[in-house]
Length: 464
Image (cartoon, rainbow, N blue to C red; front, side, top):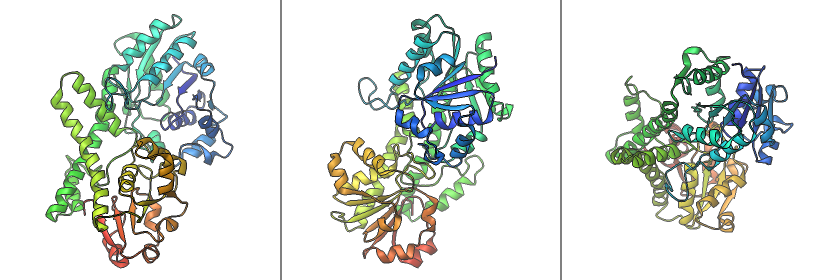
């Protein structure tokens, strides 16, 4: 089976970059990315490719090469589904905020809506690919919907979870550690569908990195990988608190531990806590699945990773208040960075949101600078928490376009995203322009000790 037309439902952080790279690497395949969000599609089609809605290093160049040739962005979902041989579902699967499983289970309403739309429109056989992060056995539910509400069309359901790290998504797509494809590999039809997707990726990914499994293993592998990575972050953050109490240096501990080949050095940097759309959501999903199956000890184990992460964010903010003489009321606090990590404009579950909320509860005046996050997104993030009204947030939080403006006359500066540009700032100038006494809080270890000593900051870092 040779794929000629691909449709991807969802033009977000996964669907957009993934389809752009597939289109670039497979010029003979027409790739159409569809979304009901007209503003998002308009941004993907902007004449100035630098204005596409997702910032990822290298992404604009990929889009520029393929867009209009074999990469298209559209709001005409039905037409794209009808023409497609293969349909990727890449819509949001947030944690439920209502009903059974509230606060833990994945909300699959958008997945179901996609399945019903595919079933309604399709007139010929389709391969449907789960790209969104989903609970184990979601493919079974998809299959039931498609088979029982459609037009007698035959469907093969594949699981193809993404393993992208935001900020390096294009590099991860170009040179992945592995591409995981799950399908019904025990039947001829299922194996043919798996092979069709393997052939797409084989345009640029070595065959030995293309792993094929059954659907259930593929779905669970995604949750497990994110849980393991988040566990490492919470583990080193837990040790950072112990280091502070004992006089140990968490960076030295991390280096010593990471040099053990059985452990490795990645994801062993202490920080304000992990953020992003995947780690917390996937671990909560894993907790919910475990509890649903009566595996309470397993659920408790993974839930502790989340509890440690929440504790780290509160601890960072509380230490800021403590260092500033136990009050930040009426004091200007500059936050450098709002995205959950560098090289992305994604703010979902960013530690900065929760640190800001804590400080606002203490009546601080917040000024934010982030090179890629727009002001409306910052206010939307604070509004989502529901702690204060939109009017209150806008009166207490200012967003500026210059880091020096943010830090001028501030009582403290907190570096919450490890943007490279923050390493290049003139910290002596910043220190002179700040109020005295002034403090620098760094959850990402951007500055070395020599720099700190030169500029004379009272310095506090998680784990230092």
